[in-house]
Image 1 (tube, rainbow, N blue to C red):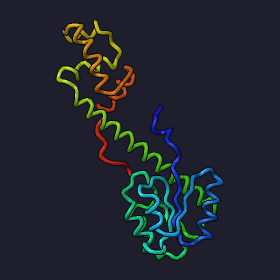
Image 2 (cartoon, rainbow, N blue to C red; image 1 turned 180 degrees about the vertical axis):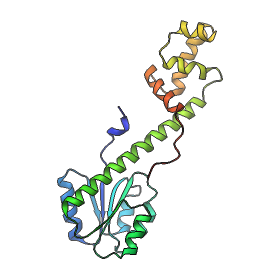
Image 3 (tube, helix red, strand yellow; image 1 turned 90 degrees about the horizontal axis):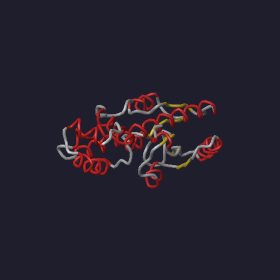
Length: 216
């Protein structure tokens, strides 16, 4: 089981200058069980949510910074999906938003069924991105830990991961059993593992090619 898949549900952020739209949309999504925070402008959102992950639903026209300006400031967040909803945007605005990475551009008034579907699709995408980023961070940490092993320990680690006994490892590697016993303690400590299955999982991470980014 992927432990990252059981992380807490991601929230929905609504940034819109229209009070009625914010309240109605927040109530609609909260009734579906989503955590929702709403803001009248970009400045309030940035002040209260400095590192947003989840689904950002915003309008093009805002008080202060525009929706496109806000998008540019947070678009690098890998686990943040951006959806625009606007009644006044020009075609050029919609094209700019989509080119900058928005998942969708909805035209108000948005039918509740479409709004719910789009938001939940975006949350699914954000959760997958969060899990992928966490797995990549784990793999990088595992590679660093593996790099801290002594010159003799990397050949021992895969055998420990297979649950081999000290006597078997000693014969296979032509080492003294006392040396294997010592390294059996050292390797799990450096790799931060408690069981052979934990070590096997980390060895699989190390053997996998490093990830250089998330799919769009």
